[in-house]
Length: 235
Length: 235
DNA sequence: ACGCTAATGTGGTCAGACCATAGGAGGTGG
DNA sequence: CCACCTCCTATGGTCTGACCACATTAGCGT
Image (tube, rainbow over all chains, first blue to last red; front, side):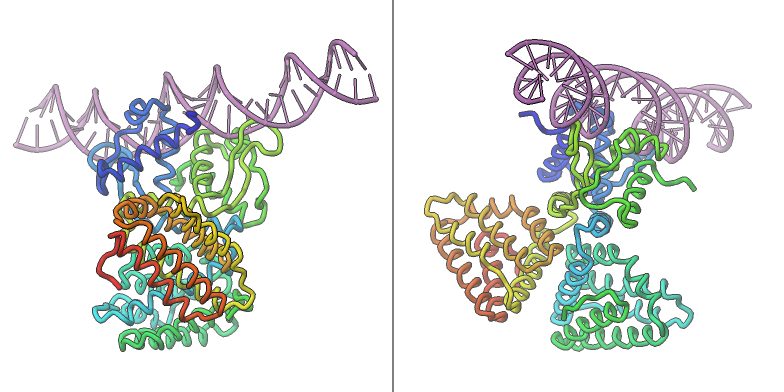
């Protein structure tokens, strides 16, 4: 039954080491050659496993010598989630429509949690909104700040899983959002509207009006996708 | 500027081929050796990229000859999402608590969507609930069916992104759920309660009572985690 | 004590070899 | 002509060994 492929063995070993606490964030993995001989597999198999961990955001690899070299546990979930969602959308495993709807669900949850949390800190989000007032922003720059804003809100809600998913969903549809922006006739008017909506949402959140904030964010997102020609016939 | 590492080049090539429609689900990738020579990289670099795609659920590889051999685009997001979330939880990138809260958000959204959809089909979910009535189920079997039930609901809602995320979140905390079950003193009573709650939820959904269904699913999940000793102090 | 240089440790990559497997081609016997 | 068996071929899976690039460190010479 030794069906397990060599690289899976490496992956499993590292996973159990993580679960059992033998490996913790910040730790360095053994050198590839050592891992290979320890586990009785070839170095190429070790590398395949490490590559997976790297793309998933669990490790960072560095050449050379010293404390920053080798494979280090970092556990930054953003990159991995983005890569996964982007590739799945590209491969048509995730319909664009479902991505947008999922974003709507998560965004609503974030806004709801924030508005209901008396200890909320929307300072970062306010800063981004202020930065979006600059008059000479290109659509690309504006949309980049928009992504930052929504991400800042997700982070302020304190749920790293949701924040990672939001970042990933946004990345996955980034090129489509970009393309949609170019199809908007009066960009300045659209941007002005988005600015107003952002402030309204933040005001509702800071006022603790969860219901109003939820409605606003819903309309904000569906409105944009409708205008950019990305939405289907859903609510 | 040829900073890109060889395997990233392979990954990018495949991604752009997907985005441009040169590769579609069901298609076969060129053989590893051919890809390597085409892109001017070594075969091991190609393999590292393919390994990433495989773990993310984009391709399936098969040895031998014929139409089922080679790397085939499949785009089944479940496996990739599960692997990512499981590893991130193991590496402490995702706190268990946030995973549970995210599950709550998604599950509520699923139930809400189902209850509000006049064309809903909860037949699969009903079947699983019926199967859970078997008297001689071990806790492990019972929990496995429970996972199936929640997944069936997610699928019935028609959003594959949410379904994949739910499956992944469940996988990520599977071992903890399992451990929690063993710590429950009166398992039979707990299981009976879960059965009742499942039926109540399905009844509310089929009755189109979204609000009641939402409340029930919330209490269902938080109740279990509280009993299994997995929950923190949140609502 | 300082500064340059060589050695060392590490990931990144490639080339080549071999194995296991699955299908197909082609021969062989009925 | 067909059925079966055998060998060939294409493919992924793995290992080994060899380089390279890079960053640190040890050691040497002044």
